Image (cartoon, rainbow, N blue to C red; front, side, top):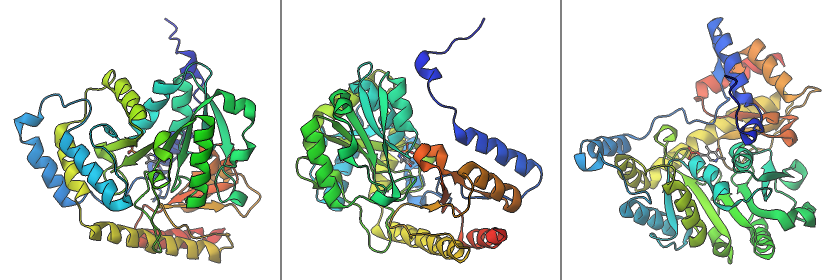
Length: 386
Ligand SMILES: *Cc1c(COP(=O)(O)O)cnc(C)c1O
């Protein structure tokens, strides 16, 4: 039988990262020593106290059963406390917070809760691919907002045509940003909230990198902007902050009607998060500030090494204030796939071509600071052939 996929699935563009993976495997099979600055996955382990908390909770038979769909009240309370402490934002633990199986899960389910056929979701370009792909899978239409360097990688809201706005129900944004490592100033967030209120757009604000800031930078929450709770939902994740990408724990929070709709979708698809993971999540959120400071210091040292090395090679770089990425303009007449191919072949360095995040990512390459200083120094040395 000829297996026919859904039209929506056929519309999902091929995943560039699968191609990169193939090239990586091949290079490794040839015995190349690769320095992988490709994927945004922390290289250091989950802190031991979180692992111990998981172990203890996993030993308790009470946690072996189906969890509550909507998340454990104790976890939701801890999340509310965290928001209060970190942002001075008040959230109602029961109605305004929804634990997720990783924030990607919630982000990808959101369009199903709000889009009717042909409704538009505004999606940044370049961006984390889930915003576009989930919109398409839900039967909606993505409209791409270019993130350009000359506008500090913020979307120009005035450029979105009125005809598009009429059909728009959702907007995705992510600051601190992957892949550009840009941050959003408060003045932009204020304009953004006004714009979404005026145009009746649900704002999905992805803060996966909220805790990764350098040089005293602290990312603001959208809920520090007045009026935001009328229209916004914010996505958070333990993945990058506590080196817990594999554990799958995040949350959505904000407007209670938005949160409720996402919860309804989820209750029909999954049956809650393993309770032992939720309990370990509570432990993670109680982690001393010191851990975060150490982590930021570590990434900052790596950032400075790579920025310094690339600058010596003539790459124009603005050291990022946040995230563990360097998003750099390619200083040669070469597209991003060709450049990444060349540095993989000639120097054994894996980086991600900007075009993999959207057409406005062309001309850029993303380096993830997910190798230790020694390997980053080695990478800089190997790149001197450029
Ligand atoms: C890593 C990442 C996420 C999500 O991670 P989860 O592991 O699913 O919580 C979400 N958004 C962006 C932009 C990311 O880079």
